[in-house]
Length: 242
Image (tube, rainbow, N blue to C red; front, side, top):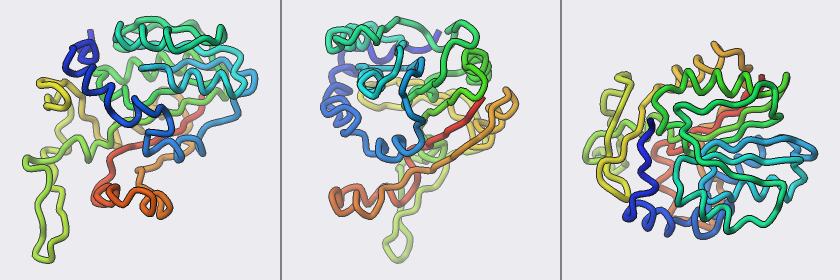
């Protein structure tokens, strides 16, 4: 069973104060890039894996989705999502992505935002999603970039000219890693970029687009504090098709 860190009071409180929690999709720095990767939602049956507060599920319904089913392991997240959602097109269920089962050929789009790095058995999950999609169904997801997940401590140093250097900690050693983020002892699973992409290919997906996210010039003008995101990729965005 995956670690249910989101139901820990200190973690949930901290997560609730993040920009993406307070402002929804518009509060997520990578959202503009994700939008460009998404298909038209009209009449689509969508599953949202790790739906959190339900921001994407509600957006998909507003954009014309036929149905949206959101899963999350956190009871606190699902409770909040249900309270904030009035559209009958959207429903939510509590589920562990490690053991999730989905009906075959039941969805046109599978989506996930920053959830899969908490999943140990990505191989199984990718196979589950592939079977649940209709032919030519889309799979769009984001994860923490594996480079971002494998920094040494301290997170960065500087070179002789004062530029930041992000040394990696055993990048090629995959598996469980424990970090302190909003709470102590948060468990994540490190996989290389190659492993993630090759797992999708092995399960029968065609890779459509891969983006190592960086803020655009326009975003940097609006948010100069995001300049540090140019030093190393924080998010990995992937679009694949069954």
